[in-house]
Length: 249
View 1 (tube, rainbow, N blue to C red):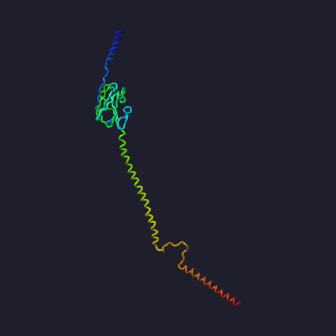
View 2: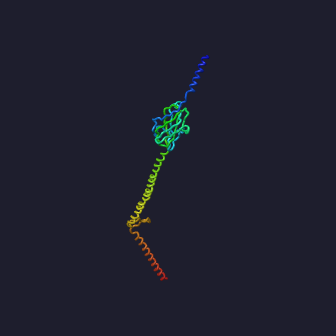
View 3: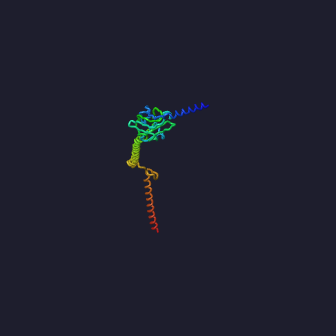
């Protein structure tokens, strides 16, 4: 029993000695995956705009997000990152730019930068705490908002010609239609001219009494003259009768 206790105690002491004697892992410097470059943010095959990883999309600005592949326990965390572009480089570190990193696990470590739109990423390097062999460009959030106004502005003037075309037919049509009654007025005046050119014998007859025969007017005149003659004869007869009665008296 005593021998067993001594052995176990010795083993525990040896393990503790090994633990405390093991040196801490040193930081390492790695490069970006060469298969990810060169590229622009717009030309990269994965686009994601995450509010927890740089946000976006932003007008005129690109967001680049990098990741340490593998398990966080072995790949470690980013301590600094330098992105190399065709026109210069951008560097960030956990001391001066803590808001540009997602460290501490359990997820893999990520870092992001924001640049002006259209830049071409050609390379990069990073200092990490783990043993990852390289880091990846996981996704980008390309700039948006700047190109959209130009097509809409070029298309906006197009309705104006259509408005001018729609307005042009209305007056001409209305004027041509309003002028059309003039021929009808000239046609309505034509019957009066034709009536005045006809002889007076064809003028409409009055709608008074019934028409008489050919000698109707002569018969009436003869009867009137006969009555006057009879009246005159009767008057003369009365004069002679009075005179004869006066002579007898």
